[in-house]
Image (cartoon, rainbow, N blue to C red; front, top):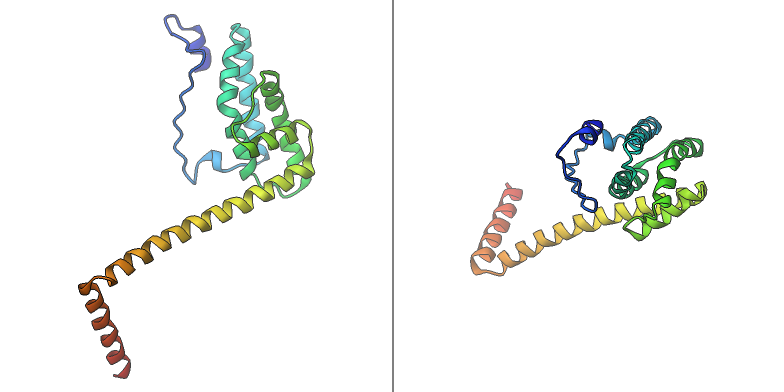
Length: 184
């Protein structure tokens, strides 16, 4: 597809405009992060780079990198290698892409991704594993906070209902009914 677009006549290139519309599904390939996934993705990225370069449009690959940098870092967040060797193997596949991003002076958009990016470029596997632990813990805490906020909203709604006379009467009638039912 990229080669067709590069060869086409009459297409306008917007050099500083990127539009991405992702729909994330749990069963999506992008949620099945593995060594093989990274190897195939980077193989594709290298092909795309070679296409852009062969058409003297390498600057369009920079735009692609800008769009993909945070996505690939997010994939590393989700990636759970069984061993340090597996992580090292995957990062070796990814290092080409991240070095290209550095060459283009691109930076991730979040502080944690900036740290992860630097650690990958430095090949600091131990620190990468520690950052991943922190990220996973933060995600678990954020999920728990989300759950508690929803429970809190539900409880507030119940309290508001009980504060009305009608709600209070329903509660009392239900309570009396439960006690009678227990005695029977």
